[in-house]
Image (cartoon, rainbow, N blue to C red; front, side, top):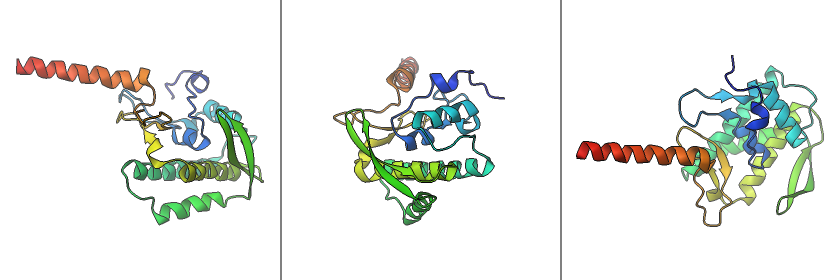
Length: 201
């Protein structure tokens, strides 16, 4: 039974502005480290909000096969992001798997307006969840090819795992949200220093 509130999809749909990152962040981790990961792909309200947010070419919930494919794609993106953040090269096998998702359906390119300018996006020519998988893969490929790798980050809170693009001028963003993980780690560090001082004194 889910412990998430009924309005979770609406109140916690914290989009980073990229379709692929929203899929990555559908692995919802408790940033305090108290609860296990909750897979938002199992939450119909979140899936419906994701579909609506990105105008995805589907009319129903994903079946078991589609869910398995989305989770496999998500795991692939997470692995590639971990390589980037540990300054390891993306492997040929990872690229081969990404190309496999890109080939799920023919795509057409289209320019869309986004905050701050224009963006080239790939849209599937066929409806259905394979088209969604190809669209997510295309969004991720776009990020990899036009975004400096140092801007693709994971929250510095080891319990969080939130993926984001650091748009700060000096690449100083460390947290998914300052009010959440930033403040939490700040308090933990303060308490650790205080405890060390008590022991030392």
